[in-house]
Amino acid sequence: EADIYQTPRYLVIGTGKKITLECSQTMGHDKMYWYQQDPGMELHLIHYSYGVNSTEKGDLSSESTVSRIRTEHFPLTLESARPSHTSQYLCASSGLRQNTEAFFGQGTRLTVV
Amino acid sequence: AQSVTQPDIHITVSEGASLELRCNYSYGATPYLFWYVQSPGQGLQLLLKYFSGDTLVQGIKGFEAEFKRSQSSFNLRKPSVHWSDAAEYFCAVGVAGGTSYGKLTFGQGTILTVHP
Image (cartoon, rainbow over all chains, first blue to last red; front, side, top):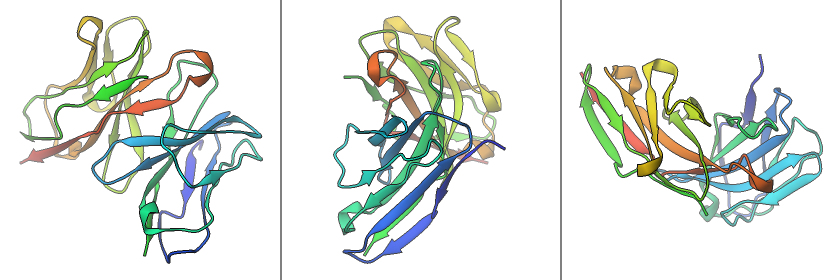
């Protein structure tokens, strides 16, 4: 079944640790996105990619980085986690046609202590 | 830049009552509009979308939304709410052209509580 997967679902980690949030999709979508969502707030786009080797910063500044080496995989990395990075991170993907919706993963809830 | 406003942060309705969630957008051209629903601890699920054509769009779970260009609105409605509809609802506008198409701008969300 075509889907979009995020791991881990929950992560509690100490300050200063390096972390990678995984996102994979099996729908063959070229476009992929990372959104950040704080409790009770809207989603903010932090990274997007329109294909392999294409990555761009989103509307909200983030200290995280992303890579797109394979079409189906779009990991997000924090080199040194801080409590201010505590948030929910949602990955999404969509097709190339303009009138196409985004499909979302279940999210990773990150807590940095 | 586009923006989305959901004026109601929290709405409470009784099961079986009708529901309307408000959404106003700001965008310089014809928008692509979406309603997503998020249950606690889950990702977002698409309820319905508007790209063009009929301004009244039908979605899953008995939801519908009406695009009103003159009011820059895309309100979500359901004639009879079920307890399982309790969740957070997000309205979003998508960029329709240029190199930025596909990126979504979200509203702050409306939390729906359903009383038995």
